[in-house]
Image (cartoon, rainbow, N blue to C red; front, side, top):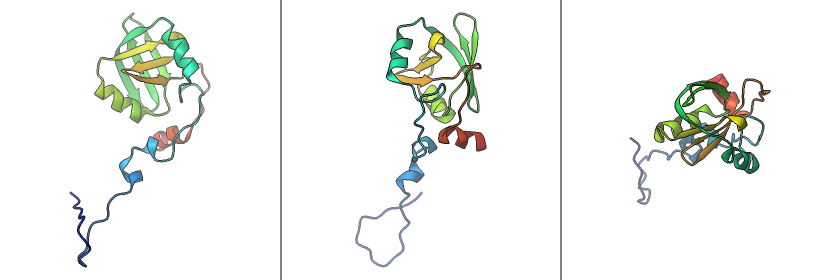
Length: 136
């Protein structure tokens, strides 16, 4: 564990504090995505259209890289992609059981967080965030 001192430097060595970039997850280190293509950022109009469309509760989500397999409460499955699976995984773990899919608009809501997903038929465009997950 690193120790930090707010005392004046007495000549002894102090450990260097980590930079903000070292503390933030990769998706927030300046490698953010500015794409609104399927599987990337969700636009407010897309979100508005989705919220007014039929929804299904998501029974389970299996993540494999940028690909996710959704088991829906209507007995169907969807295979979608999202550019930032680590962020999605963290939010799914924090908010278990609070996941809703809007299949008509390939949108996923986990608690208050929205994800624009790409279907298998959508063209996929890598971004800085998905490239990090692809190379990891």
